[in-house]
Image (tube, rainbow, N blue to C red; front, side, top):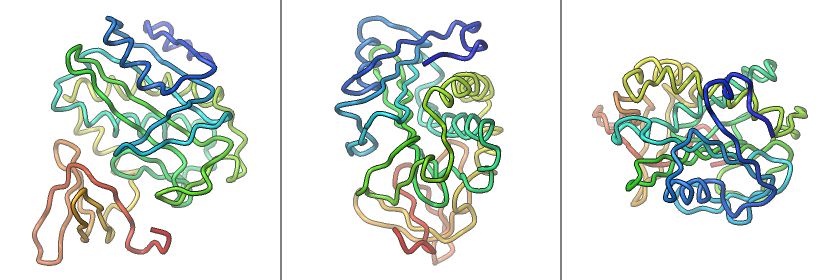
Length: 254
């Protein structure tokens, strides 16, 4: 695994491992010990990979498992926006390598990428509050995907794209720098939101949003100024959703 030359010139570092329990967990442990980053942690395999809501992220060899550790990347209230920033960076990197996928890949709020409406990548943002550090975890199904998952899954190889983790990681390390500079600690989120919306899954369509205590249905109207989902519900009112799982109403695979 190698960083892009632009990332190296910007002072970004990389520690590549064969096996870790979790790249995010390892990055946060380093933060507790005083590591300030920017530092990428990668692993060929994870033994305890995790996704949002405590779900297991199946982590077989051949896929990309990477975490970027940042210290004080902006105002803490803006940190959730980093899932959108990272989603854009990953989208940028993949389309640079495989431009033929442009119409087939979309970003799913708040933290996934879809290929032909099936999930092939996920992002997990975790913080170490005492150290004001953030771990941006990225998992990409390059060679395989779980047979059973909460949401329909796929991988790049199944789509006919032979993209090894090393091929994707180098441009990702460069594209992440560019999107973080654009975001500018939250000051540039307006342009991030615009770029994200242009690549979004389900924007303007009827969706369901699974919440911790129920479910909402309505039209995905926009992202608000903080990156939350604005849902236009049946009575004409708008509901702002800060955390949940988006499911397309038109999808029969939900």
